[in-house]
Length: 296
Image 1 (cartoon, rainbow, N blue to C red):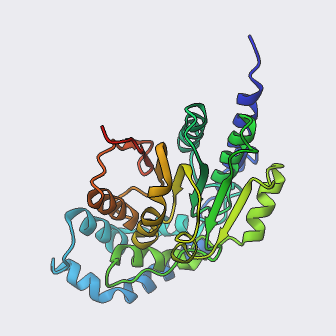
Image 2 (cartoon, rainbow, N blue to C red; image 1 turned 135 degrees about the horizontal axis):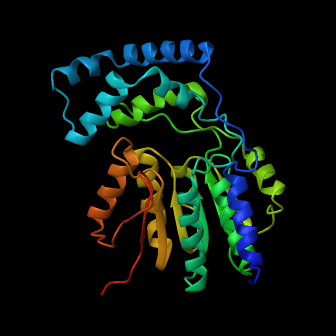
């Protein structure tokens, strides 16, 4: 049996960014965590008391899926669910993606290179940088590192606060996530994570700042674009300024394509506005992607 060095290397990077080398079981729920979660749930319900009353009276102008999601967050959310949200920044991994999502990402990246789709790779919303680290590993392993760059776009301050008047679901989720720092990871920490894998080289570019400030000015071409901005405005802004820079045959990967998140509706609105009919491919319960195909 022949040994595939490239596959073995990428398997190792993929396992490592997902925390598989640490092999630490999830700790049991502590009394302190449960009490903190109960207090947070009370605060969120108090903050959105008016919306809860309107929800119970069916007075909110929402789609059925949005109403169901909102009811789940405000009325049915269990204390254990809140604890898991509070633990969101605690794993030893460098990504929150599961193995199926990482395998799919790696496959899209390799296909983009095999098919010679012109352009770099970019992720918008990177947390600790794990997905971007894997993308750069693919580029280097396939020998195109000197010709393609990996762009790392993030505020490095966490998620922005959504407008509750226009994006109520996002605002409720933010009220929970703000307790954990809303995915805030400093730029220097992400740089250090790249360095731990020996991948902090001149082919990695950082775009620190809010998407509305950084993405309109970015000039380049993309073979793969991965969006993990969670909210409606963040996702729509990224698509608005970057979609036309994705080459024909390139991949657009959406991390948050789920009705509970504003990103789902932003993607649907953008695709409808631009009359995009390229088929969406489902990776898991949340992640989907499509290839940007030329007109027939």
